[in-house]
Amino acid sequence: MKYRKPQPVPAARPLAATAAIAATVAMTAMATFASDAIGQPAWPSKPIRMVIAFSPGGTSDTLGRILGQRLSETLGQPVVVDSRPGASGMIGADVTARAAPDGYTLMHAYIGQFSVNPSLYAKMTHDPARDFTPISLVATAPQLVVVPPELPVKSIRDLTALAREKPGQLNFGTGGSGTLGFVAAELYQTLTGVKMVHVSYKGTVLAQNDLLANRVQVMFSDMPIALPQANAGKLRAIAVTSGKRSALLPSMPTVAEGGVPGYELLAWWGLVGPRGLPAPIVGRLHAELVRIHALQDIRERYEGLGVEPATNTPAQFGAFMREDAERFSKLLKTAGVKAD
Image 1 (cartoon, helix red, strand yellow):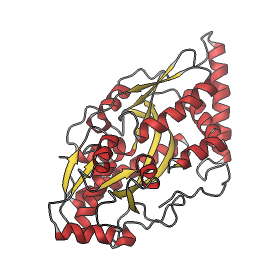
Image 2: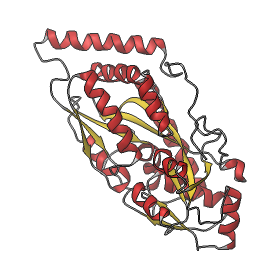
Image 3: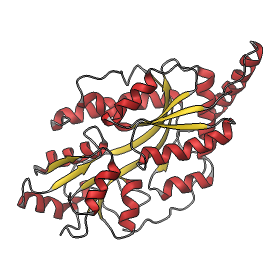
Image 4: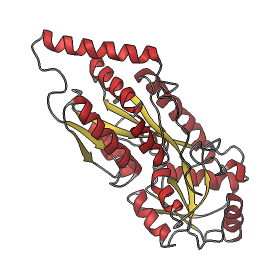
């Protein structure tokens, strides 16, 4: 299924209200005034570290680098990527949570770290709800269900029928137990009653390499990783995991439409800092994100990857993360999904 470039959309996002932008611009001015008043250099006065907690080449890495490059230009200081993959994003989250709240360590956050991990892992060395300062949502996207072209499957109904015919004989690959791809596949199994074998990799890209080689037969994958391979005919896309069809792939059916009623999962990415990040710095970063996401070239780059740029206020983002974590807690408990 080929990606169809969407029609141009207004620069302002629904959650990036005019009032929010005005407030953050005012906070930026306050930050500059406060710095000058006490004789300290205005923030930022040195390079900023952007922690990315997932493997190079993955969606978080790709989106984080796009955002980091533009922030470097707008803030006047280099934004340096610090890759800290592993443990379903918990290693990078630990690094960020323990950093000084001075605006020089940020993290490109992922849904798995804040909405999924707390329900999958009994012991964590940081508290996603307490140890971070929310800045803004950055992007959203459904997962894309893909299979090798050799697999005799062209829809979710076909996949379900084949998995029932061959219980325990189909493998699904993921970038780890805490990833949304893992949760998406487990939820699919729970709602359909099929049994597949989980094969965990140290990153979604590595899992996709084995999918391309037909060593695993199914992936619920991040859109930016799977969509180019599907467009090239190297993989077959059969569904998206969102509750409604993606505006970027309007002809692609949802998993629910494929005979799994009630199925819905949507990935998100955002920007956070350590707990206690000063409000003026949060306001400056939020204002820059709103401005960056209004740029047509950034919107086109995001949409070309299969994700939709999104912005909300720090307060809205914090509430969004809390509500999403509660939703996943109920969902995973009901489905009986646990980390391997």
